[in-house]
Length: 386
Image 1 (cartoon, rainbow, N blue to C red):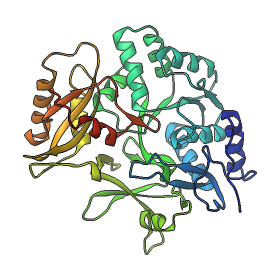
Image 2 (image 1 turned 90 degrees about the vertical axis):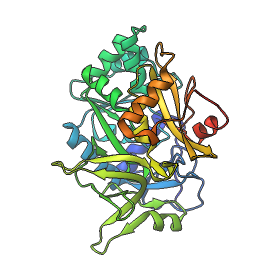
Image 3 (image 1 turned 180 degrees about the vertical axis):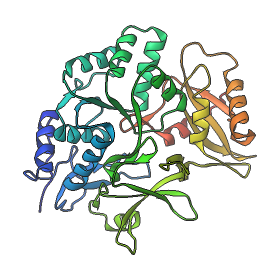
C-alpha cells in the first residue's frame, strides 16, 4: 500500500510537495494520516479543520493542485514569488508552497514567531524578487497590520508599507469584514478575497468571481453553494460514504462538491457569489432567520470594535438569542453595546440586533486564523454581556 510521506520540517515539505506535483515522489501529508487507506495517486493528503464536525482527510491530485495554481496565477497577472505566513499544515499554507513551486520561489516567515507588523515588514524585505510578489493572509493578520498602522504602533507604518508593496494579497480562511477591506484598500493594499476549502484546493472564487475553469451554482430549494471544476479533490481518504454524500456527478458528467454555505449569485457581468454564511450557523430568533455573517459585517464597522463573532444561544423567550462577541480596538465608547444594536437594527432589522454584547480579549480559534464558532457559543452561554 502506498504511504504518504510526513516531512520533518518546512524545507523537506517544500521538496516533497515539488516532487509529488512533478510526479516524482509519493503523496505528502503535512501531519500523520489517520485513515488506514491507500492514497493512491494523490499528491497531497490534507486534514480539514473540522468545521462541520470531525476532521476528514482530503486527497488532492497533482492535476487539481496544478489547475488551482495555474488559475490563480492567471487571475493575478502571472507567476510570482510567494511569502509564507501561514501554517503549512492547512490548505492555505500548503497551497502557497505549491504555487511557489510553479512560480518563482518561496520566502517563509520564521517558524514559531508571532505575526507582527515589524515581522511582516522584515519578511517582505527578505523576499527580494524582480518580478511579482504575492502573499496569502487570514483576516486576523490583515487586521493586525491595518490597526498597527492606524494606531501608530511601533513598526505599524513599515508593516503597512510592506503590505502595499506586494502585487496581490490573498485573504481566506474566514470572512473579511467589509470595513477592514475598505481600510486596507484605501491604504493601497491590493487585497483579493478568496472563497474555497480543502476540498477545492483552497480558494477557487476570487472577489466573488470563480477562477478559470471553476463553476458555481446554488442548490435548488436550499441556496447552498456548490462548486465544480478541475480543482476538486478526489474525495475523503478511507470514507467512501462521506465522499459520495459530498461529491455528486450530474447527468452530463460534471462533478460537483456541495459546501455547507449559503450563498447568493448576483446578476452582474460577470456574476458574483456572495457567501452568506454556513447553513447550520443560522440563528432562529423569535421565528426569524438571522445570518451571523451579515450581522458580523455590520458590527465590524462600529467604531471601537476589533474582531467579532455572532452566535445564537438558547433563550427561553426567543428560542435563540443573537449574541455578539467582540474584541476592542483602541478606546471603545461606554455606549458601544447600544451603538452596535442600533447599527444592526437600522441595517438588518430589529430581529438581527444582538440582545447581548460580550467583550473578550481574543476570540477562540482553530486552524489558520479561523474563529472557533462553537467555542465562542460556549463562551457566550452564561455570560450576561451588556
